[in-house]
Amino acid sequence: MARYFLKRLAALSLSLIVASLVIFALIEVTPGDPASFMLGLNAAPETVAALREQMGLDRPLPLRYLGWVAGMLSGDFGQSYTYKIPVADLVAARLTVSLPLALLALALAVIVAVPVGLIAAARRGRATDAAIIAGTQVGIAVPNFWFAMLLVLLLAVKWRLFPAGGFPGWSDPLAALRALTLPAIALALPQAAILARVLRSALIETLGQDYIRTARAKGLSRAQALTRHALRNALIPVLTILGMQFSFLLAGAIIIENVFYIPGLGRLIFQAISQRDLIVVESVVMILVFAVILVTFLTDLAYALVDPRLRRRA
Image (cartoon, rainbow, N blue to C red; front, side, top):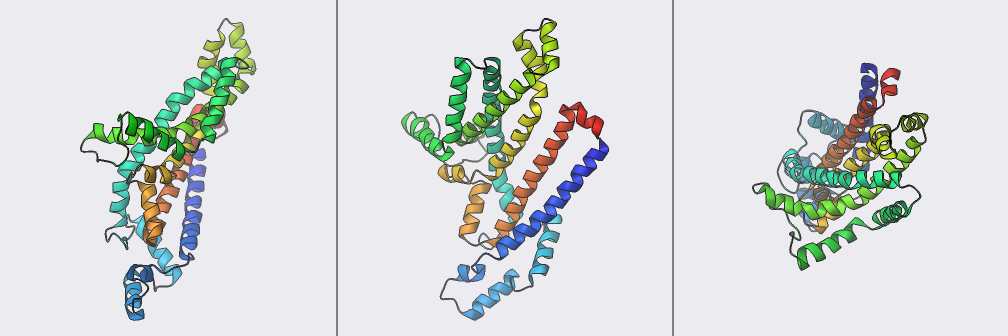
C-alpha cells in the first residue's frame, strides 16, 4: 500500500510541474500588456515602462516563472495588480464561498443520484427504469445556467422562497445557506443525472457476476443482494465520477456564479481575465489545477480502500 501511495504521489508532483509550465506559458503569450491596460491607451511610454518595472514585467520569463513558483511554494502568490492586495487573501475570501457551494452541490447530487441509480438497476427493463433513463437524459441535456434562471423565476421571483442572487456572508449561516441553495441545485442537476446513469450501469454489470448469483441462491432477495454486495463493488466508477464532479464544481462554476452574483473563485477568474490581472489568473488557475490533481490523488487512494485487489497488487 505504501508503494502504491508513493507512486501516486510522484505522479501528482510531476503533474503539478507540467501544469505550472503550461499555465505560465499560455498566460504569458496572451496578447495585451497589463501595464498598458491599467494606465489606458493615452498613457506616456515612460509611465508604462515604470509600471512594468514595478510589476516585474520587465524581467526575463524564466526568472518570472521561477519567482512565481518559489512564491507559491512559500505561500506567497504575489499581489493583485487591480485590487492591490495579496492574491492569497483574495483566494481565501472567495474560497469560503466556492468550497461550500461545491460541497453542497455534490451532496445534493449524491442524495438524488444514489437512490435513483439503485431503483433503476433494481427495475431494469421496466417502465420505472425507462422513465429514470429519460429523466437523466434531460438532466444532462439541460444547460445549468438555463435551469438556474428557471429556479430564479420560480423560487425567487414568484414564490420568494430564496434570494435571487448575492451572498450575505457567513455572519448569518442560515442566510448564507439560503443564498447558496439555488446555485447548488442548478449545479447538482446535471451531476446527479450523470452519477445516476453511471451507478445504474455499474450495478447492472455487477449483478451479473457469479457471487451475486451465489448470494441469491443462499436466499437473499434482489434488493438485499443489490445493497449488501453489488453496491460496494460498483463504487469504483462512481468514485471516479465523484472526483471529477467535485473538481468541476469547484473550478467550473463561473457561469452559475455570474448568474447569481456570487463572489466565488469562478467569478474572480472572470474578473481577473477581463482586467488583465495576470498574477491573479495564474495563481487561481494553478490553485484550481492543484485541487483537481489532489482530488484525483485522493480518489486513487479511495480505490485501494474500496477494492481489496488493488491493495494486494500494491
